[in-house]
Image 1 (cartoon, rainbow, N blue to C red):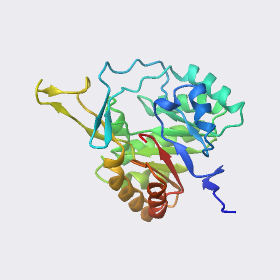
Image 2 (image 1 turned 90 degrees about the vertical axis):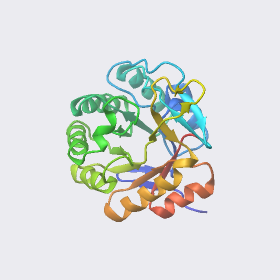
Image 3 (image 1 turned 30 degrees about the horizontal axis):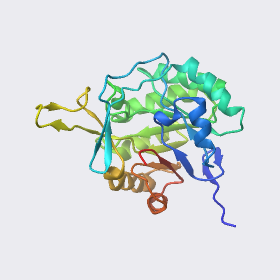
Length: 264
């Protein structure tokens, strides 16, 4: 029988498949539904310290075989999500909590709440392209390093850093988070994009700028994983445009220890 188990630092998964952080990880019911498919771990929607409404519609548009979204990180806040994580953990599911914050200190506070709720690891969303200021954390090595250090100082569970291609050098940021103690790198987040309605002569999304995901970004994501694999010694989690077994294998051949599936 083929061995499918995957090691992400101190976290061992029964297989290398996960969902990507997004709307399907918004609550315990959805997370348990994902777990029922047999994936190695479930990833929550990104959660902040306090509840956040997000942007007005339209927030999601199909384009070129993929999607551009600008949800604005709507979430119920860390206290509510902690309750949802506890419900999922009672069913024996491996949970990775995606977290964000306005400051390194906020990241650490949310991460600690998720650890206390039983999360097996935290994924730090350092790179959302449409949330004010968030992407800057993964565009500058020194900022990403500060966040990792703050979180590692507060939690004992594995810490993953989700990076963007929209940095001057994703490799340098990768080296920075590794040096700061990150247990794994998630690559990549959606890429900043815009679609304009030529009849109305204005951007389609209410927020104007969103994040492109799906098959259009897969070659870029694979390239980033390959470059990071050659530069760092911590595990990589590939994400971006996976819609088939072949796509997942491509990421693994590029250097990923596991993969996440979102837009599919």
